[in-house]
Image (tube, rainbow over all chains, first blue to last red; front, side, top):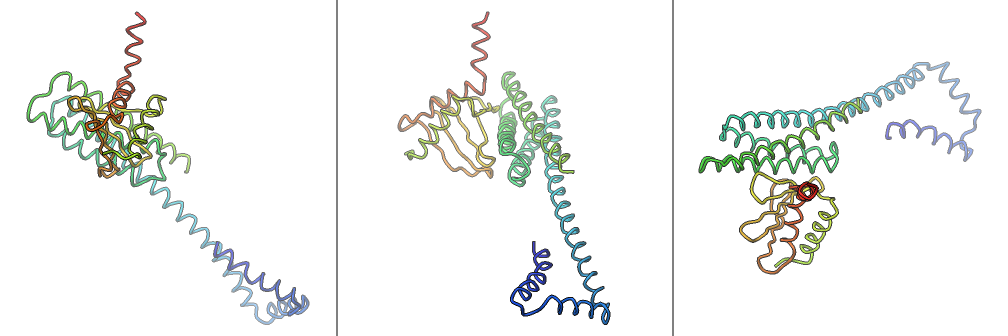
Length: 187
Length: 100
């Protein structure tokens, strides 16, 4: 916006000067001709300045796109780490390592919250809701895992935890797939 | 004592649940259902004994609201039953039985 305004400003001033007859068209043409003939370096200076302006605008745009892509990649990395963590929890659930389940579930809960809160413009509201819900589901797994130290879990409770784990996995996978799709679209 | 706003929220949740707009999820705790809202709020429904509790938290787990039906009947019980119906797919289970 500003570079374009700066580029256009001299032309606007020239038009105003011509409109109010402070300058005539002939005097402008003769001044340009004199400049070209007597001082060609100033013309080259103008050309180089315009070229630098164009390059700077392009560089700024490229930097913005790179930053946007970086943000998307960060979200995908967070979701990939969440997806990996939920799979690991599955393995620890199968082998009854409740202490590890508890620790991993706490980590995953924090990861889900981060994904929902840190990139609000990268995910739809529904997906952010899914991540928040996944965080709550995983938190409930962490809670049950910590109770297992007090009394062993019943078969029914294990099945419940397993169902909740699968549902959390579903929600996280869905968010990851969406984020990847969005990244592919923007590259 | 719940405010009118709290009652409005419960009413809205009940209506949206009945219309199938809210996807409640059962957690691994018995009688607990959760859902995320607007990408920044969580609502949890719990049943402890015969009392139902509704809790609203933000994304950082700060409790914003906690109401229950212990003082006056404000509809948390009915909302809990509706949420359970959705989360555990009770209608499908009934359909399965009826169809035989």
